[in-house]
Image (cartoon, rainbow, N blue to C red; front, top):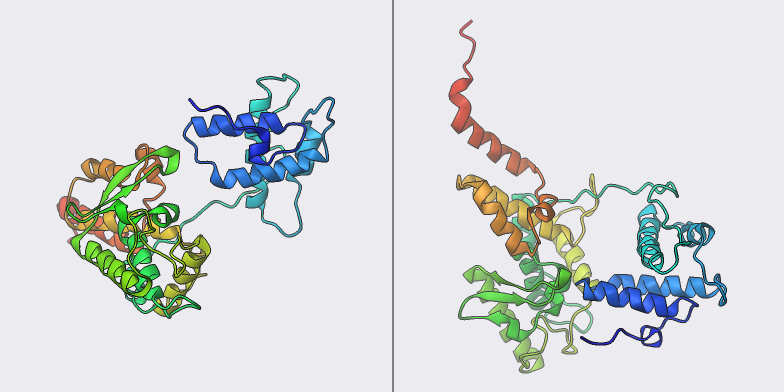
Length: 332
């Protein structure tokens, strides 16, 4: 087992630097990637460096309130993220110091908006896929449609997380089996993702186009390389997503704002719709969907199953076929 990271290795400088380093090492040992949270921990560390005494660095309720207080016009969700982080840290600190108080989730009256994904309808999905082939070239990115357009198709048709997609390498695509190897994703889980033959062919054509433009790629090179040969950023991928929505005539803001991660929700909704149309046993299929998405169980997949207009019509059809004989029109 590797030794826990030193506080200096993590960039921590506050009186609680060593404890924060141990906290981070514990989360990593539990299987949490903690990428975004590391930035939050550094922000917390900088804050604590100006608030805590070096002699007795106690995190008090007053310190928590000041850390979570609103900063400018930031959203309640951002404040909620800070509260969640410092709650976790306080729970860890309390193991060594019983004086540390773990703040209650409701103590700061943060009203967090309930997340409601925007799932593409079947018609919108078809228009989106077509738009992916029509992405305009970007500055220094002449084959943007071939690379990022294919990447967006993969998000929608295979339900990958954006981070999983950006970390894919050339070696992760197995042409013989038509599968992608997703390595060390959420909770450090790895999985194989089977792809439809036409989607595999799209990725192969993307690889050929990129090799013709940028030269051959090593096995450890990104599957979707940027013009520099490294990974595209999430910002570039999100920009291509917004452009595809615009080309497809899909408004980003309607009753709820559509996000890049909603392509994963749209994939789950589309798969459920197709299974309904095929009259399959959903109870037998849903565990397969959970495994395909890389979830630890069905509970994690449930929030991806949204009742859309397309799906509602199909569910009505199924119930009508099964129970329609019980409903008779009034002869009068």
